[in-house]
Length: 237
Image 1 (cartoon, rainbow, N blue to C red):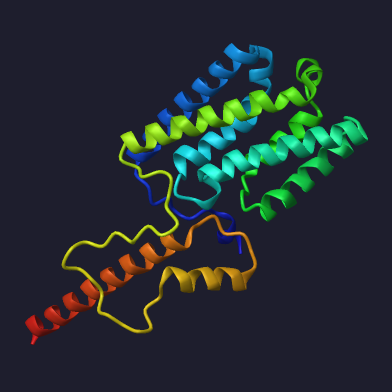
Image 2 (image 1 turned 135 degrees about the vertical axis):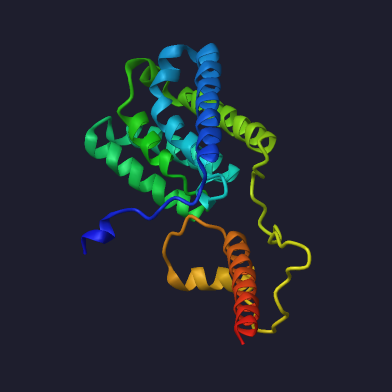
């Protein structure tokens, strides 16, 4: 039972960790700096927490469904709009802040732009600093500017470092030429995986296309292993 509490081994290499870390640092720095130039550094620094969390998703797990462009832009817009509305109607209390975060979650799910750091943003905007409170609805400006700058950084940096971003909805699985798995009318496709994910009715930070690519890669490894075992058996005989 205790073994279940320990995380599984990470399949990425240290070079990928370094790539993501550099991108996260540069992206967050650019976002906060740009926001500070336009709206003042006090406002920009108040948003640095959610921006740092978003940067982890956009640079370290950019293939995840929660890290796609609509997720960050739509998520930040939902969270900011709900938070400011709740603050106007119910005041700026701990209870109203938690309510705003919950309502933002429902709206993000409905609009298909779930982005976890946006929950922190909703809490932050309700329990804001005096400078941000004084901006009232104009606080949408620094929020969306910061999100746009971070997204632009991820688009440029990830693609320059050979990480395709954003992930397309119908992106084909990468299969090495000559290694195509045998044709099968029962082969799993991305559409099948979408239906299966819908049946589970739970949150999974992975796209059907990524699952399809993983399944095809697994089939190739299984095929190679099977061929290797057959050859080894013939050699032994």
